[in-house]
Every structure is written in C-alpha cells, then in structure tokens.
Length: 231
Ligand SMILES: *Cc1c(COP(=O)(O)O)cnc(C)c1O
Image 1 (tube, rainbow, N blue to C red):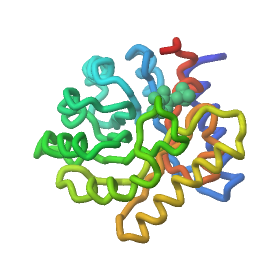
Image 2 (image 1 turned 90 degrees about the horizontal axis):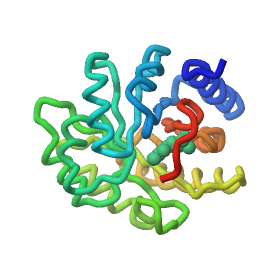
Image 3 (image 1 turned 90 degrees about the vertical axis):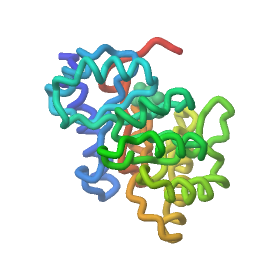
Image 4 (image 1 turned 45 degrees about the horizontal axis):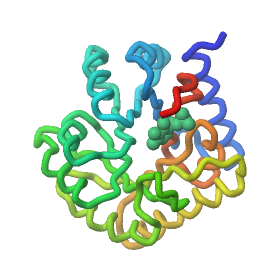
C-alpha cells in the first residue's frame, strides 16, 4: 500500500543500499523528513512510523505545524531549511533546533542574538550554492570559508557543517561532482580547525549520489509525503 509509513520505509531502504554501496554505516545518516506544503497530519503519520527529524522551508507554515504537533513532545527535532528573511529570524531562533540555510552573516548574527538563553545553541549549516544558480540561496564556494569562520565565532550558534542544493539533473555523475565539491570545502574547513561533522545534502532524486559523496543528513520530501504543487 502507498502510505507514508511504507514510503518512509522505502526511503530508509534506499539509504541503506546507498550506504552498503559506499561502505558506510546507515546510522551515520540522519533522515530529515521535509513536510512543506503537507498538513500536520502527514507529519503525525511519519512520527507514528518512528520519524523524529522534520524539515520546513517556510516560517509561517512551519510555526503553525509546530503548534499543531506540540503535543508530540520534546523528542521532535525541527530543521529550518529555507531562505531566512531578517524579519523571520526570531521564530527560527526560538522554535527550531537546526538551521541549514545560513548564507549571510547578518542573518546568522540575528539568529545568535535572538536564540533564547535557556535553549541549547542553534545547530547551523552554511549553505553553499555549488551550481551557481541565481535562483538559489547559498554563498558561492569561494566565500564559504570566510562565512563559516565568522559563523563559528557566534556565541549562540553551533556551526556543524555545510548544506547544498545542486541544480536538478538526471546526470548522477554531475550530481556526485557537485556534492564532492562541498565535501572538499568541508574537509578544508576541518583542516582549518573547525569541528564540523555535518554535510546536509541529498534529496528525493539524488540521495544516493549525496551519500556516495559523504552526506550525513539527507532532506527528503516527495519520496515520503508525495508530490507537491509547483511554487
Ligand atoms: C523541498 C526541499 C527538500 C526536499 O525535496 P524533495 O525533492 O521533495 O525530496 C530538501 N531540501 C530543501 C532545502 C527543500 O526546500
């Protein structure tokens, strides 16, 4: 049957197969279920099937879902993966565990300043625009190092690594090269002394290529929840 539970299971099987192929341990990959455009009930179904990490890309929509799912308790981990506008930083700082889409120091500074003192630091990734598409967020690869070092100095953010969304392609070799570029950037930052352990890359169509290149977090929407309307 085509249920969220079965699709979630199918995604986990794909992750396991990709890990086997790459000689990696599936326990080293966090699956972030991206429920954007889907109602809280869809996330509830994924939660009932054992899913704990959820990604959203739109602040207002996310805030409503966090309210709706508050009853599920503290074990949910919320990842903000969309563009962060400066008038929305407070919601991200107050309600999310992770932000994957840092591409401006000014936004990172606001998030750090607004992170509540009682909460653990906001876990953060710098987004890299690896394909140079004007429509996508992220810093050019040449600017990733400077931004990462600046973000790493902010007191209430914990820089964990890099995130990327390459251009859509059916060319798995190209996808893999894009992911490897980001992996190499991350390795250079680690050599510089930044304690990074997260590569957020891979979605429904390219998670195998991302895992082959070293992804530790894959963000999967369509393959779990179904097709979305085009935005
Ligand atoms: C929507 C979205 C995803 C999930 O994409 P799918 O192709 O549906 O798996 C992953 N990352 C980001 C940043 C997104 O906005």
